[in-house]
Length: 249
Image 1: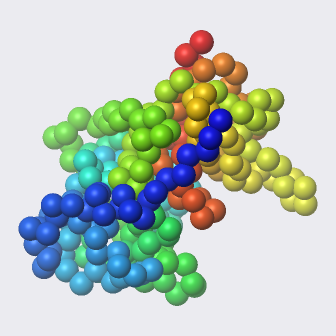
Image 2 (image 1 turned 45 degrees about the vertical axis):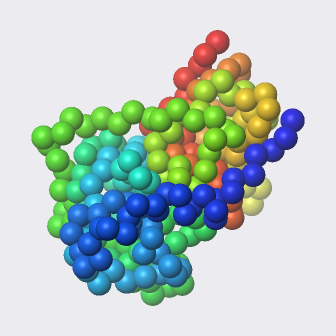
């Protein structure tokens, strides 16, 4: 069995192709164009950029904390929020328009994120809850839905970072384990990597210690996992969203 290595740096260029004709002074842009601006660890956005897409991850089921992820056909971006009830503010799978004016674009590995200028060393700071209402417009004319795009482990690339995906015919390699470990000192649940395989390649899957099913045992038999390709502990890792675990047998 061989382990997949995601060639994110090279394939990142493919995700940003054909974007040079978009306005550099502002206006509606794709997320791939926004990614092309992340040439440093943190970049202040000087122009009035707007992005549109679907909310593909948030704190529903505790899977992503203090943030939500918006994706379009070209990629995804994580938006940092100082709130514990993000799903009530920006519901999962809602179609949204995000005004990026005055925000800072950060890069964490191959993931990009939006927030305020940092004062504590992290790439960006969380946006205040009250400010979210001024920056996010939920498009009620578009039905709130999003369908995961099918991928195999071997086909995952930087183009898929923070997009809504589904990987089929997986089996847990850490059978008998729970989704997350318990910290020996605090006795609290901590974010944990588990491994799944399709019989050939291995997929790193990260689960938050705050997740509603953090103490559940890993599924037996074949499953499909739906979620986002995230960046965790220095490498790409799949993160289940909306409890997207489907048993196939």
